[in-house]
Image (tube, rainbow, N blue to C red):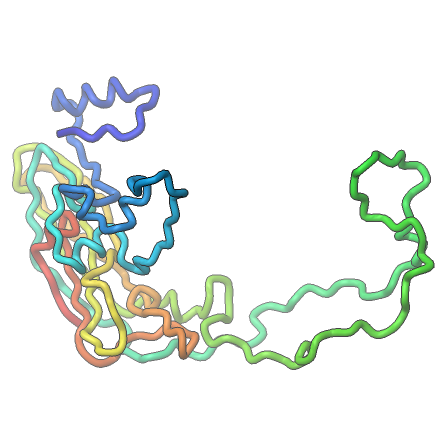
Length: 285
């Protein structure tokens, strides 16, 4: 089976190169292919309701889309997320999980005054600037941002709603572009050896999935993709692939704390392989 996706100018040449073995394929599925429509849940049948109802999709699945849904309900797919074949074979082994920073529930304090908001001129212009310009010809039924008269303009304090002038506390999740800088600090490094055990040079796509520690308070997916890397390996050779996991990778958004929270009790599990259902090596932290 060869999935060519959307065709392009060079699709014919590309397909011929793969079929004839000139090129060793290394593509991976960006979605899960189920066995039946029922595998995808009720949301997949939005176009199959009787009586010509207007399709309504409420997206109640939350985090559980694609492979996360299949994992949660233990559904065996036809072809799983991340699946892809090659004319050679790869073997994964010798996984190493190294702690860079210790676990802590919340990120470090946000930096102070990392940026200043822009300042604008607050002086009130002459009211006549709001009048319709004499040199512009009015078009019928067109809405213009001008006034016909300034007689109705009232001067005085603006009626701001209650609480408008109350200073809101700064979010601990912020502090710089992209959020708190600590979210992008590396806390764990995971490395794994990938060996080409076949007779042809090929490209391996190592995929890293993470499982959160068991929790009675948070409904975590079975596993989540947290990194992937494609490397070219000659036949008979081995290369090491390394993944840097940031605090953001290891955290979840707590709606009560309004912050990214890392689970400090229990163990994180890291699994590496060639697809979401082919993860032969694992380690914990």
